[in-house]
Amino acid sequence: MEDLYRTPATGGDRLRAGLALQMVAAATGVPVDTMSGGVRRSGQACRARWLAMYLAHVAFGWPIERVGHAFGMNRATAAQACRWAEDERDRPWLDDLLNRLERAVRDLLDAPRCELPV
Image (cartoon, rainbow, N blue to C red):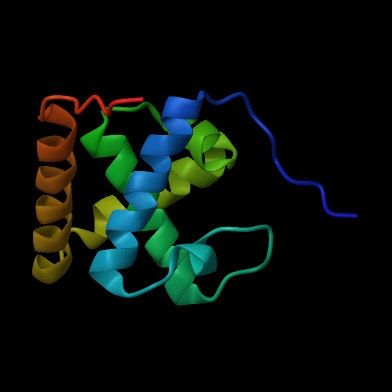
């Protein structure tokens, strides 16, 4: 039986984590279902998930522990992901990608909320 790390996270946090995963998936071509789930991931899928975790950290202003909770990971895993992504920002193409993703996420979240009729 598989023991997954479970932490309390609000529905809103999980929704935003999903947004970060979708944004990274669209930008990298790595499907969300490849980044998620309780199975061992390829190096590419793991790095894509780390980018999504880092995006959540910087674009939402979340502390590392909250990032871990929203992604169903422990704090140490979230911290490792964010350290890796921060170090990789020395690569101009990745820094540019992350800047564009951060802007897109912030623009989306800063837009007026759309209330749909019932």
